[in-house]
Length: 190
Picture 1 (spheres, rainbow, N blue to C red):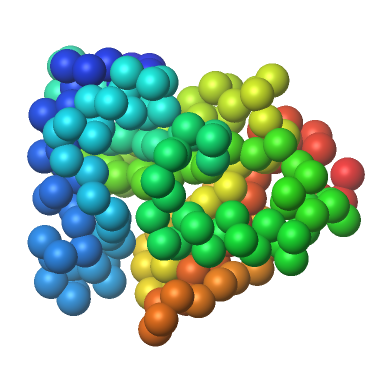
Picture 2: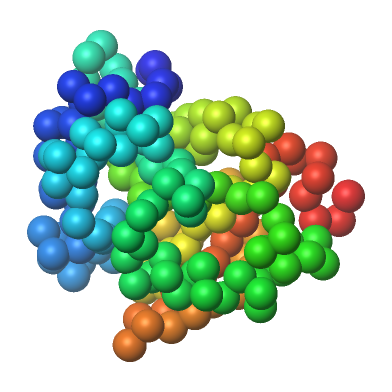
């Protein structure tokens, strides 16, 4: 498996992978079993993100196995409502006794793995690649996970050890905010 920054030519395959795993494309059962992604990420937006260096991909002999967004909040000129809510909550969310606003962080997500590659360590490989990419740029990776997406919660909190920092609600949807230090020795309790 090769983990690298996405390039513009990856955009059509990334858009296809994203669309196949979007909340609206899945049944309730599929969402519960495999998780889901949300947001509007078409070919052009993914191409632009790749050109700005805010996407990582996993490839296997030229096949896209997974993708992961990794961006500074400043890289997102028009944040979607959940990101706006996260940014508005920065003063009430803490990492190691400091507000999130005073902690350099990168946004982690969305992350999606192709069906044929699930259970093969691709998500963990993307997480590890994100930590490497973020080192020196930020102290923390921050993700927000809709709490109904228990598969994503289990992967990131139970599997990768991301720390819950709090939550926020938009309408009827509640999102948990989780973080991971870019340098594990700076994690909670050290």
